[in-house]
Image (cartoon, rainbow, N blue to C red; front, top):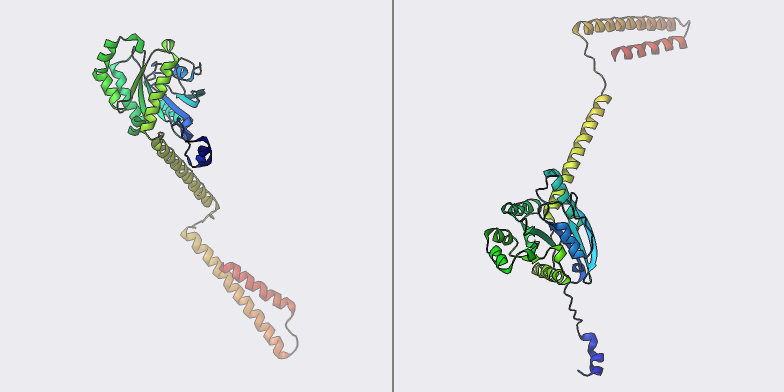
Length: 312
């Protein structure tokens, strides 16, 4: 196309980029998994290109970041499975922490396996992953075998034909990669590893692991907490109601009879006094000598109040 024609119509041509990792995928999030002593921290350092993690027994989940190949990479290191320094409860707590650090979710679980120390029992890691992350986590997993330089090509071929290799790889849809030990790694090794990771991300349409199990667990814990708080509030309210409730004294039968007898006696006396006073006043009015005085009226009112109080 002629240059002038291109300038005229270039607004109608879509912009095509060679970088397929756009938007959120520019920020790659990787969670390192494996048994204790598998070399997760050293693998993370090799990817980041610096000594970001301490290469010792990891006891807490930790995140480190770096700019690698024009991309922001976040790597979350975790304590190793079957770590004798952590209880099962502490281990689960660190797993939950790794998911918090990779929020909203990791693009990849990198299961690190050291070829030199790989044992039959290490296949139990698969069960640990399923228990802590759910079966869907395998869709976002890549098995990384480290120490490849320690095997000849023939030994490597025999290993890939073994049952323990097929068993652990089959859970991750056959996704695996091998790399040399950290001291033997060169930049092209990291480049190929990242290309392999990109392939898996493409298989998942650029999606990341959605932590549904953790979200449900967190929601459940929140509901339980609110439920317990509600119970405490109700108990507190009931306790306050009991304090405010008036004390009811139920007298014995003989006490009730005595009180009633005394009240009846007072009522009879008041009735008698009232009748006497009213009769006296009436007589005086008939004879025309005196009229009802204020003192008499006050006494009548007093009698009425006394009678009301006694009846109460």
